[in-house]
Length: 250
Length: 262
Ligand SMILES: Nc1ncnc2c1ncn2[C@@H]1O[C@H](COP(=O)(O)OP(=O)(O)OP(=O)(O)O)[C@@H](O)[C@H]1O
Ligand SMILES: [Mg+2]
Image (tube, rainbow over all chains, first blue to last red; front, side, top):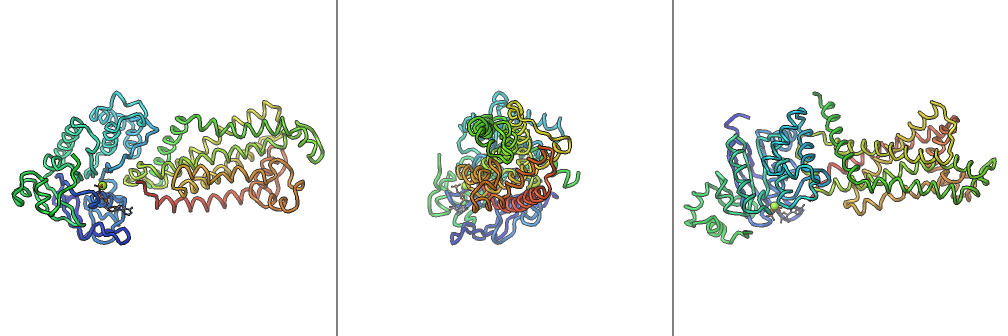
């Protein structure tokens, strides 16, 4: 992927479930090395977008390229470049935290010493070293979420999808996660995250997109959106630009 | 590395994952083994005296132990296969499958790793049950070729029944359903030559017993362990196993490509 290729490029994306149109001509571009926050109320299609970009779901129409590869025709190349932490837990609860991370390292074909080092590094980074040898089933909700994120990072993906990454985390874990996102971006990683916490988008994102009615109704830096709508917070922005309030879970 | 080498490596990783699951659930493994053990004790000590007298050529409890032990080994294979439907359904309904689907791994490794783990668990269970049968006085007459044949047919059967149960588990949609749908595998041996020779059954039932897959498999195993030539039974047994394997492998792959958690 050269530097000018966007990390994620979505054009005229459509997806419907039966009669219900979820994405209705979505266009979205995320430059490499930036954070894009996709905001929208429940059911807006955030998870659907992430699932299509991460090869879990086939689009009905439109094109989606991730790391320069088409998700339909080059799904294996896309998979080699991405990491996904979905909205719902994707850990193996019968294994310990360490074994979960080791599973990821083995599936990423890391060498044995590299795998061991990488697993220890992730355990430390996510504050799971002490719980490393307990079964994940015994972890608290926040610990499971952190393990889920740690598993995503084992293979050093260039493009990371985080679907509501901080839902269920306490304020401290949330700030820790924000710090990790900033570190990843400093290393050149691209991140597409979805959130219902407007503050999170404000804190992390270079670009914010508001998803409503199956397309983007507004897009810009947090500052631009505030200026454009005359609102102070992104809550005001959402109300001004969509005509209805975001169903924000605070 | 080549694609095939990666597929083998990923399958090994998945094999380790599944063996860990089995070790973490020792109660399930114990239950799997307890079932054939109970059958063995029941059929030898409760029914064995009478059943042995009814065998062609007569005999008592010891003769019946010699007749029923190979069938109990086949039931052990079914018993382990049943649990694999549960593991497959669990994998298909939990979020981790979506993680695997976004990784650049050989898709089939998720299933082949599970089947490989099932074969290991079957080998363990069969060894335990055979050990008990030997302790009760079972004395197979097989030489080296007979034992190799016995191991071969049990392995083919394990692979066939495991793929069948993987498919049933994926098709089930829930762990609960998956623990019920393969139950017919525990009933079929009763309608075969497992416990009594088929010609002692009523005419209609005898016809069913002679034409269902468990009968040639059990007769083949029995012949190998008795040191006899299984003849055409072996052809039928191998044919059935291969047929079930091929069909259920294809069915599983189709189901797996459609699986989506959440
Ligand atoms: N498999 C499916 N079958 C039918 N409808 C679906 C399916 N998956 C999602 N939908 C519908 O598509 C719409 C968008 O869902 P999606 O999960 O993308 O929303 P979201 O923005 O992630 O919402 P949330 O904030 O609740 O996570 C919803 O109305 C949902 O009911
Ligand atoms: Mg969602």
